[in-house]
Length: 82
Image (tube, rainbow, N blue to C red; front, top):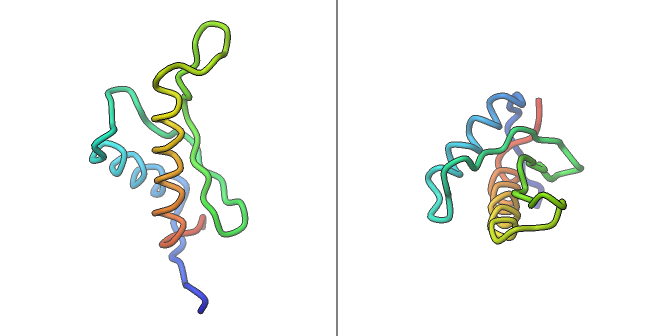
């Protein structure tokens, strides 16, 4: 079965993604996505990964990665970049 997705602009996708982040239980102030790319059927979101001064992951890094994955999973089912 082939799913049909709706085309959205980059700005509209980022707005929707950031609203979903703010509503998520794992959200923390300052977390947001500032980019999205289409990789095949998957929307890949990016933003700050909360690295330390040496560029190493912090305690927030895993949480952020999981939230970006959540966005990709949920929004890729519904939308593609226009």
